[in-house]
Length: 138
Image (tube, rainbow, N blue to C red):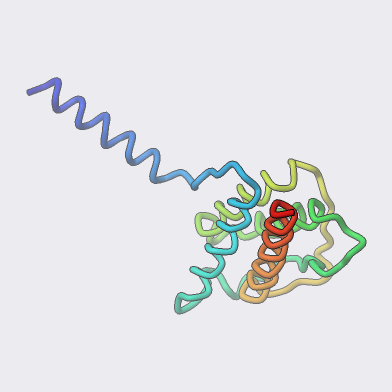
């Protein structure tokens, strides 16, 4: 009885550990898809968590900046959200792994509400996903 109880407890502990970690994916396409999907999930709810929080605006349409720089800036902007950190941690993890752990600078001069930032990030990551899919098909 005691060994089976220990095994059951170990299994439950393992399940809890796995479920508390964000999904880690390997391919960039998969990570971009996950970011876009999570944004759609948040936007389909009644209200985006901490939607009135202001974050630094990222110029996703600035062609002078590389995609890695923009991903880095987006991750940096989201790390400033402290009240709803759990909701945005999966975004930060995936964005950081996509930009290759580079350091970037982000000005807080222009700020935007989180509820407006997320659709911009979603459009950007969706565009990156489509470009990756197109280049893989060729």
